[in-house]
Length: 116
Image (cartoon, rainbow, N blue to C red; front, side):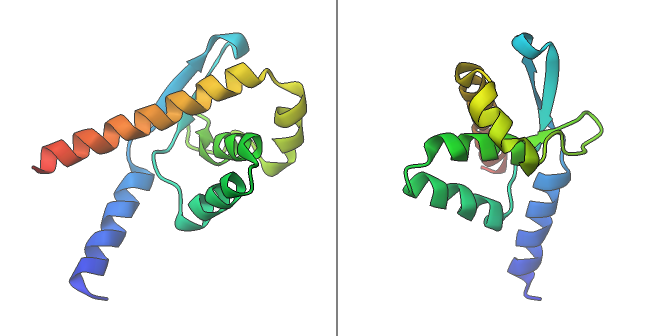
């Protein structure tokens, strides 16, 4: 592997294994932990859904991909997708995923600032 590819994979491993963010959801009386990074395959799926105009589906899949229990295990599975899409308050979903994405943007900005 080239040196730059070694650095790229090390950076991604740090993103995945790094400290998790968390969002408290008062309506659910629980905290959702989340990882900052998705794999390229996961990102491609979300982009494809968004390009197809399936924004709600992309939102739900973002939650399913990112949400973790405190121990880092996945909180939800794809079997939960239809429940989220049909039986959960969409305003809460939007807020939770927005908070996750905002936290990721802040972390990325801080990391960039630290390097400069």
